[in-house]
Amino acid sequence: MKLADILSSSRVVVGQTVTSKKRALEEVARLLALGAPSASQSDILAALSGREKLGSTGLGHGVAIPHARLAGVSSSVGAFVRLKHPIEYEAHDGRSVDLIFGLAVPQNATGEHLRHLAAIAEKFSDDDFCQQVRNAADAVAVHALLIG
Image (cartoon, rainbow, N blue to C red; front, side, top):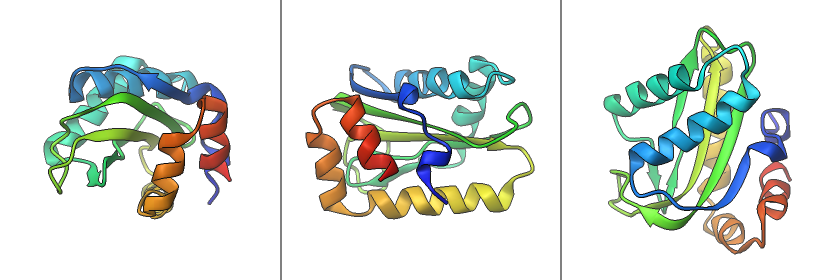
């Protein structure tokens, strides 16, 4: 599974300023909706928020992977936001989050969903990779790192 299959450069944002987890999820939902025209931004936000109620998707090390399965999504879609300032995200290690990879997958794509999550989590479990993403000059450079 390659992130290039689910993440276009138009859904990578760098330097975003949000003040809360809710606002971060709203931005992720907005970006995911760009790649899933059959799903509304509000439906995506509701699904992401519903998943967060089950437990935080904050992985630790400043990374979160909000994700959801949705009936209105025909193929997996990713979005990435690098925040200008870290926010409280209820991550398991208590650290604030500044790197957020959002994922929306079709309702019945359980296996695909898990494969995507595993690939994303593996990439972001590498501290050197995370530092490269944090230091990248712009969205184009971040996208290249993510799909590389």
